Image (cartoon, rainbow, N blue to C red; front, side, top):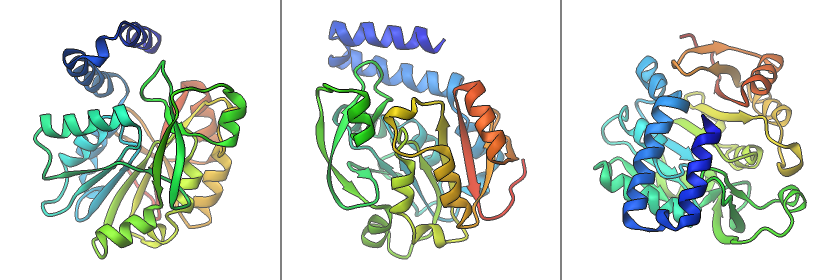
Amino acid sequence: MIRVVLGAYGLARRSGFLDTRIGESALDHAYFAYKRYVEDPFAALVRRHPELFRGGDILDVGANIGYTASVFASVLTEGFQVYAFEPEQKNWEGLLRNVRRLGLSDRISAVRAAAGNQIGTVQFWRNPANHADSRVVTESLSHARPGMTGLQEVAMITLDSFVQRRIRNAPIRFVKIDVQGYELAVLEGARSLLESNEVTLATEVSRADPRDIDSDLDSVIDFLSWRSFLPHTLDRRGRITRSNRGRITELSLSRGYIDVIWSQRPLTS
């Protein structure tokens, strides 16, 4: 299924269709439908566990064109915001387009920046074969993919600096991080945020080529476990199961990727 979808996407991209207004609209609807009916666990999660999202702001780090942010906005407590972070130009344009299309401008604030462990600018790469595979250019990625083209210089912030500057005293209830192997850097830039015992995290663990990523599953688990976060696996039905390092590794290898929910208290479905 995924190969068919990526093949169709590649054909449409090479033809130039996706650069037209009709093509952009077709991509938006197709991507939202694919996420909802094939890949996404978060729509079910907000139905099963709305308490994880209510009573504070939500950070969607790696928002792409806005599907997950729209899911989070559906459960958002009035008066709070979903902050959707997306640095890549075309994805950013799609994010703004979909926020307007869905009438969510009052609930989703789009932020054009990458999140990491420092403030400044970085090079960013968009995989021409898959718009969902955009990532910060790291030393590992440069070695694994020499000759990358179409790089963009984008702003980088830390989540701690963003929260201090933009959100101030508002509580953060949920943080989703999907950044193609750059998770550890994002977490390192959120040390103060992670001290809140009210925040719940979601990270994606994928069976990525270890040559082109700079953080691995063990480093993320160690970083969060030291801060008393407990891992839970999340399935397509929104069910949460307390887990451990071995089980997460096993599932990511068998399925290709898995979403992990991190909380400082045990969660049950």
